[in-house]
Length: 514
Image: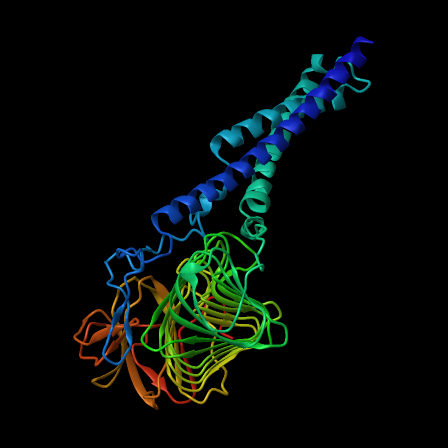
């Protein structure tokens, strides 16, 4: 009876030990999630993804407008572009992988519980029909050595599995963070096609029929389009929309939504929260952008895009766009769709991919300066089925990934995967003989470059960092370039890069070039 009681107690100790180990792992997991949330909150408080200079009306300090209605990005400080340092990235926080590991205290607790479990288990195993095994020196030695081995394997094994499969599984953490908050849209306020002063509206406004709707004024809710089978035109005439809970413009149903930027106006859209409408402009129907005005998009939602569609085409025919986002800048998600840029000026600063389509993309014109995340795993341009560049001026920068455009492109393209990253705010210039082809600066570090302009032709080129440029910096690219040479860039022991076709790639991409 006494021996049976002893075994019952030992089994209880083993059970309690297992529960203790599970509780420790769960506690570590919750602590990690809390740390992620606190870091994101702190990052958002110090940098709400809104450029830091605010005027009296709480509007963003605008990039300088030039006489030709082009845009110069806001003034850059050495460590601060648009209010964001490269390290201020709530989507990827914490960037130090060791922060996703068990702490020393957690390991000690697991070790203690492992010891209790092992001592009890080995005693039960070796005492079966051997009640006095501990009196035998050899058996006692076996008992001690067995416990040392089992305790070591248990502690090391549980720690490794926890670190690799539970705490440091970035995809799982991302999926947990992707749980969207329920947002109830208020469609009780339908509006007629006319000029609408949003300052007079107290709740969401809903478009339910075709027509042209011109919006003006400040607003803290959403413009909703719910007009199945209809063509809807939205004219932005100097609006400022800030919705703290979801997208600023939401397209639910329509045949096509056209957003026109009225000439001479600046329009600012800012979203927030963590909703399923996860773009500052979000649409489940086709989007078309045109006009000659300016649109500033602050994609502040958690894991949110700047402008996003759900498996619907997105086309740009004109306008000036300054886009910052917590994930992709432009995104055609779901089963994918085509992103087409025919014209316009783009300055995209994304914490994910700059331009991302789950289908394809076509660039026919415009001036595009696009930056993906600088923390790894993102590109300037990323598509599932490839993209072409047929015209325009394109500079696309990424951290490590590089997707090469299709050979069916009709404009020459150079892609570079550098030996080492170029740091933020470094002047980079592509030259042919003594002529500067393009010169640019980025507010974050990058390792991959895509350059395409109509001036590229067959011949030898050199890439430089540093030096000086007396031209005007507009949207990341120098205009009227007057370059004084800096230091040559060397890639795989080569400092001269030859164009002899449409796609010209230099350097090795660790992730592979598609």
